Length: 177
Ligand code: AMP
Image 1 (cartoon, protein in one colour):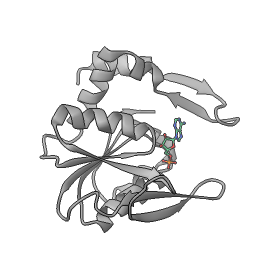
Image 2 (cartoon, rainbow, N blue to C red):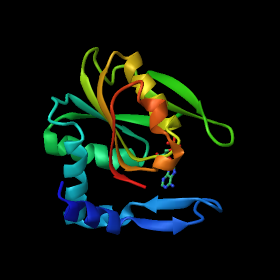
Image 3 (tube, helix red, strand yellow):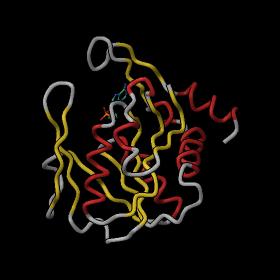
Image 4 (cartoon, helix red, strand yellow):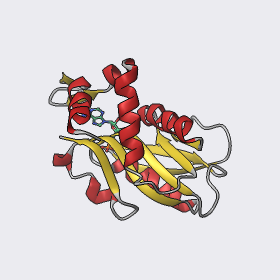
């Protein structure tokens, strides 16, 4: 990805101060989604994070990981696996809880979502503390997936979330802050 393209991506993301609570700067990706040329660049960049490895499936994390993940799947002609917040998936699930700043959250995956040994790229829009991606990677590993990389459109480096997920697979991000 050229420096100009990365600048365009960076400049299209909107910072929203104090959302959803005071002190948080929310990285709003909706302007990226709204511009087809910029969205195409974002998908190109995320695909590049896989370094040309053969991908069988892309797993996306609820909810913005679905948008990027499904677009990558359509481009590559591979299947999509949703990793959802607790209680949303209708079939047999495996779940994993993880701690948030206040309290707990859980993510779930369908037990038949991935076959043993399948090459999976795990995608989300943003890496903050890494709790969500760590839980998602554990669910994939539990099904026997071979996680090629855990890839993010945005990484908030100062939160050091990658330390929690490097044990599962290489951690890659398109833009860092
Ligand atoms: P974490 O588990 O702490 O890495 O949180 C990651 C999830 O929270 C991602 O799915 C993001 O969509 C969301 N998130 C956390 N912090 C932000 C932020 N500053 N801006 C946008 N989304 C965020």
